[in-house]
Length: 615
Image 1 (cartoon, rainbow, N blue to C red):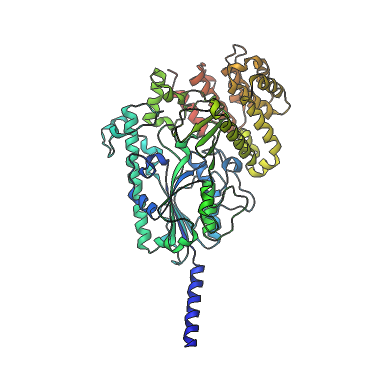
Image 2 (cartoon, rainbow, N blue to C red; image 1 turned 60 degrees about the horizontal axis):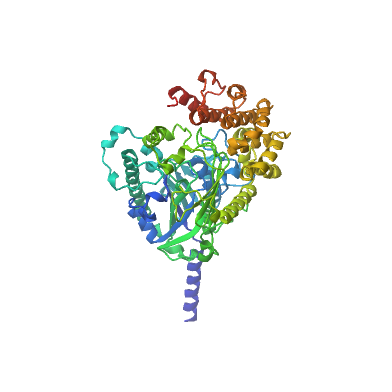
């Protein structure tokens, strides 16, 4: 009897040992270009997704998940590394050059691969950092699948992207309006910033239909997983790769561009790793920087302390801890050929937005954006003067800072930054964002041209070495938020600094202040002869916005464009030239636009000048 009991104990211990040695699988199902606003699961009238709903019934719905960036390559680079893009040097979409990762730091799929996971990607990469694809994935192709792993007992991580919801799905011709949609355009509820036209209604309805296509494709993958007997061994993450995709979403650092759906199905065999009951909605905030640490933690692997995120599921991560998280950082920089510089902080019900280049309207030309008929019509209606106050914000300059109450104003059309009743909230979030920007040594305080020439071999190291200078540049930019007499006095002094980046940011701060800063326009004009071409660019741009009659800033812009030694500098100049023509009414002599870099994003700008004119 004793021998039989001993044998049973031995078998039980062996079984427990085998269970403890078994690691969960991970499956990422990623729909492109869609925010929470297109799923009934998140309160939309349409967007029924039964397969995604089935994941939710056996898992967790995250009500506050954020992509950090509103555009693909930047968001995916953040997702793949766990590093904020402005810290890692990969914050510009459609990179001119890729950034290096710190010595010894691996993207987390590579960590999984090194630790015995079979890692596959079908198939989108779109990374802005340097790293061999073969070290990230065992396979990355249209045929990549966990089913191809040589050892069927090997744990896997599979990521699959679904492009049928991509922005390009809305690049249809007007004659296609005759093709009916499953969702009636008449049933659509438009965002208050969109004009109520048949074009916008049809475009919106068509996109709800695309979500149905995505859901069916997700269903096929789930059936494969179930057929393989792996469903209850696999954590399944469904999410959008960033927001989108109707106008003022993808590419813009609003909720519509950053707030993504996230559903995580918890497998029965690993439910003990998660401190939540299935079929639960969670209010805690999570960001793309957190996804990698979460997967590594669930896999029982160490997390590199240099990452910016932290696990939101797994041993030691309590439901109470996750519920207490209520902040998310966001950023937007260059999107294709269109430049901007925006940082956001969502805390609880409020979002604070810092527009460092708020003189550029959101509606500044981006060739790819304006392939969509809704974008084109929106601009036409603006030029015709038929839009209401909420609808025409997109084409107007933005203030240096904005504050929105997402609970009462989910579409962010009522700016509370000047409301005395919200002043304490404004100051609190302004200070929190300042702390975050300086904590990560945000590299966008230098123009992209300087980043390409001087930082990309070690962006994070550059940020650490130049921390004090970044603090100083940030504080020059912040003068646009201070009382005018104080701001003008300090900015005038910075325009005379020996440091070119001080002069650069002083010009931008004056531009953001606008016409009230005219008293120091003479000091700005001195910078038209600056030895640094990027300072000359910002001085010329500033004087055009201030609308000083002399000196004429355009000859300076032509000269800078046609003499700068790098593509990034030429692209920066062309961004300004488009802005001044389309939104400041300056007459541009296109025969004088002769940059030495006619390819890439520069070509997009030149193409726009060839085929367009201000109406």
